[in-house]
Image 1 (cartoon, rainbow, N blue to C red):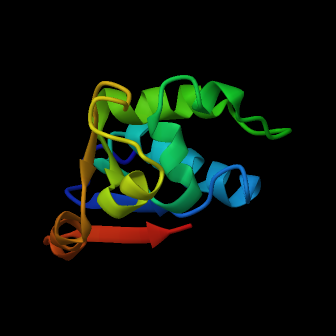
Image 2 (image 1 turned 180 degrees about the vertical axis):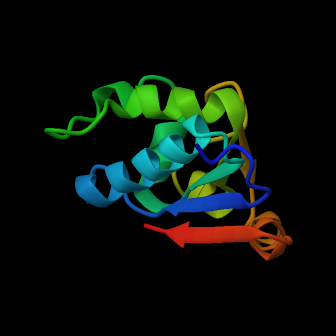
Length: 124
């Protein structure tokens, strides 16, 4: 559908279980783009940082929404998932704690990704 596009989609999730619809929207848009062949980078910030930990996405429930763990799996299969350095530190989450394939990085990397040629950033 969109696989021929050279653009990259950078999605920043700022909400977790505290705002489930906003959280699910971020994951759904990122996973839909990834499934369509769009290069995707999902950033977990604020309360969504908890979903970098094993088992946390499985516990998220929202009626009429795809399971968050499945959406995360789709994104990890073809894109990148990053937990914010400061957000992770505030929650005592370290690099050894996160799901394999998820990295921890800071604002400089986010700015680099969003300012790259052809990048489109969305914040939820």
